[in-house]
Length: 490
Ligand code: BG6
Image (cartoon, rainbow, N blue to C red):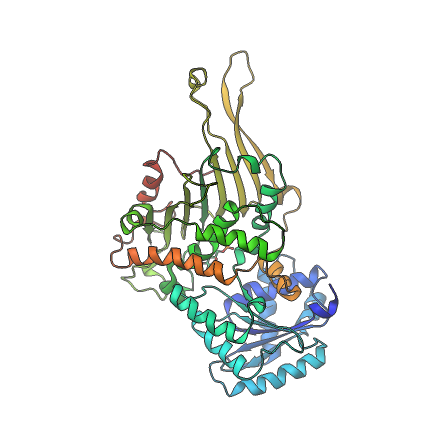
């Protein structure tokens, strides 16, 4: 790709926010370290607070020291810091946009960025619309001289209706091709690896279906609580914060058909078919197949209701376990169990495929230790593949024991995998939207999520219903137990 196409001015709305400090600027520093940040590049961070660019850079320096995966070297930091500028503006008001545009044009000249702009909306979701409206009204979205792309953080709407409305606003200002709806899970190394593992190996794909697979567990657990994001989380809850986006994307990648080509649209076409194929549940089914939880204090850690900016009577859920079915020929009859929550015992994201048991032949039944075959795709913090199968225990008597094969990607190839945001920012610069969600993916995931939200909105379980540091409410275990299964913790 020509350097000219990559060169750009990155305009961050929400320049003083958490995301910019913890993810965006460290990611840029790492891209510089890898030698792939274009030379013709600069950042203009827009924020409501008043401060100088020098003060702003000093603050960012501390964040890079804390969050970058490469340790900070002063010389390299200087190279990046010189490209970063702070621009104070109340982005809710239209008046300031003409001057902002003048300033951006000046920067474009100074850094030779060819009119290419990446507008990154790292702000609370209620500001997405107003910023996009102003950018359009002040003629800052025209791609005729240099591309103009917009990157939108999640959540994209809070239900199907609001997502549709927001999408209409955005497509009024930017084309679908120039709209990058970010789901940072898609930038994770092992998520990108799912397709390779499935489709580049002769021995996985033939058994990846309901003839051989008993069920699949997709689990993402966090040890952290809601931290400083109470204001946002109260409105989102785990359903909108994790399930509607990250967890459904994991599901789509695990279950999709092989795409006809490995290009952006072919891959997204297959993912969307899975989201479309999610079986709609009745209210009764939702009540027995979707388990909600909220953490309470365990004496040492606070409960959700005691956290900062959380109502003491909040009924927002911080945990969810659900059983879903995909209605197609490959997956008919195979349940997918999804589980995610805050303040669980460990930080881990995994996809566990449990294969069907071997036929019940008397001979094998004598062996109590016979365990099901498992294939585990470890997404984080460990990255790799784990397999469990049965083998003979060495010795004169025939005894069977489960054995494991473990390919640990971050142990063997190097533990410093790129952060999701590095890959994703670089992809926006390249104009590759494969790892971003297309509108119809968002649409079908909301259709599915809306029915769940509606079914539960009137009457929630009695919260809190699990102690911080445990695996969620007992009903989550019951969900699998009643199907004769259990959550694997490997
Ligand atoms: C974010 C959610 O999208 O993902 C957070 O808003 C969550 O609530 C985070 O903690 C988890 O991301 P990761 O990469 O740490 O698994």
